[in-house]
Length: 232
Image 1: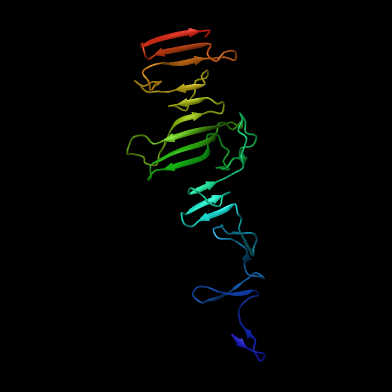
Image 2: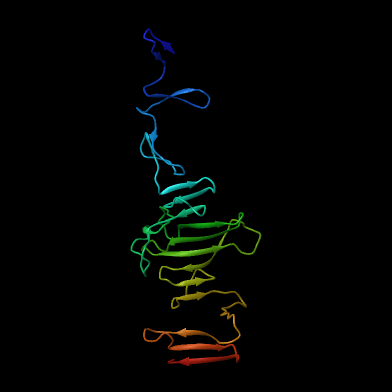
């Protein structure tokens, strides 16, 4: 440190830039031509706009009182609250990237992918998606839960799969070639249609493009009878 004849203060052994002091009083040099600057607002998350500029945006906000992050909303109502533009949901979404959340991986190998996990005090479940084969762009959706056991805590087992063809497999990842729904069960298990009334009927419809119930199997709860109908 030198004070020259003109009463200017000179610091030695520092490069060009602006001097800054840390919490311990140590002086260091900020190497940029100007120190960090920018304009923000209470609750906004600060992000570097460039090498010397800090910025914020109304689309990204932090609720200090409730510890919540809002994207697209200034007052988040849950731990992560995302408000996105509306997407028309038809039989096909023209670009899935327009949806609010994307969980991605660079992996493109068949039977590999990514997903979302749920943790209940180190007890988990998951939803995942994978590429079905390396030769096409087909994808599937898989659902996993942990069995009623106290072993292999972090392991979860696939319970249901929606294939790239829109078929559903429950109890096994495999679907029967000619079935839209495949139920794989162990001994003494099956499929139940449960009615919350002791009257009326439960039924299974068989339909085509001309009739929504061209064939039907009924069970009458009032008289305990099975009925088979066609051309209804």
